[in-house]
Length: 480
Image 1 (cartoon, one colour):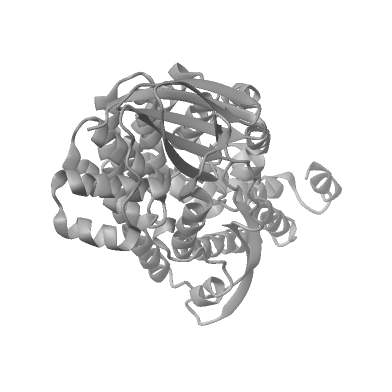
Image 2 (image 1 turned 30 degrees about the horizontal axis):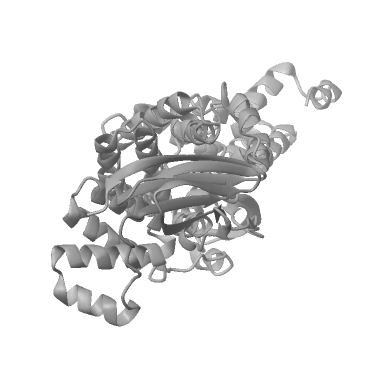
């Protein structure tokens, strides 16, 4: 850039150069906000987070944790979600708990932004001249569910069942609020486009965009519902347990652990009509032999996919009716590959597993729901950038500032690839009735001993990425 200015000094006075440069970089002054960084201006989250992501995929939790220590990429909500998850995998539970609490606090601030909107207004203004990475990160519904799920697991790991149950309740509440807020933001984006006389051809974009589908598994987290039900049952809150078991069953109608638990609760609560229907559909579950205990295993596998970069031309009509085509960048999930893992074994027998949650599916569905608002925002951004280019052209008839603005617009056009990228790709459940005494669970190269007590339920949590395994267990009390 300096070379270009020096070559043209003989035809362009310094004062004019400065004036043109101010026009080009005026957008930076709009972007004077907490999220302003060279990374967010000229790159995107998946690219900036690549080393951490690779470490987690390989199971190198300690390296990922050390790389995240000073990182604020993604802002306080997302960066602390990543830190909390990685520290949990690294068995650094105090750090995990602290990070998740900080993320939870940041989410509460985000929810109150209607009354604290000045700083976010600057973020939004800056994003119109650059990209959406300068806005405060608004977590997806499924991510909020996982935030409270892992806070709950942190409490359970500390033997605090009551606090874990509070997180289960909060998970449902925050997801509903997030859904309402996102619907309001879509309406707001549409109104802003209309007020500026700009209308993108939304249909032409969505017709090309990959869709995750609309199955219930894409919008409801069966992992969260099942864990909630298990913990309610452990606390003898049977009605709440039954409600969540039934909700989990609607999401995963072929999951054997959920089927058996729902039938068990229907019997205990005397739900005769429900019980008749369940037994007709699934048959009588296997009963526990006298003096045995039960083990319930949660098996997390792999790492959720990163968002990629999708570029295409966006047709936009201005107020005069003219159509222009602009190149835009949108986030996308493509070529998703799931790492395969062998079933864990209990003593010498492979555990029979059932799918609880497909995080990739939830992530894809969430992005599909957000794309209409993203496209509308893109249209408004292109309009803003085009206005900056016109202003630069008027201020400088040499064409240099116009060229600089064009370069600025191109290099700052980055997709919003922010998402919680250290979550598990898939989650499975399994269970078994065992004789009292010590048994061994093997996953990969790791062997883990558990002590089964008669007529007691034992909860085992394990997570596998690469060749690494994190595993722990808790006693959940008597089987009634």
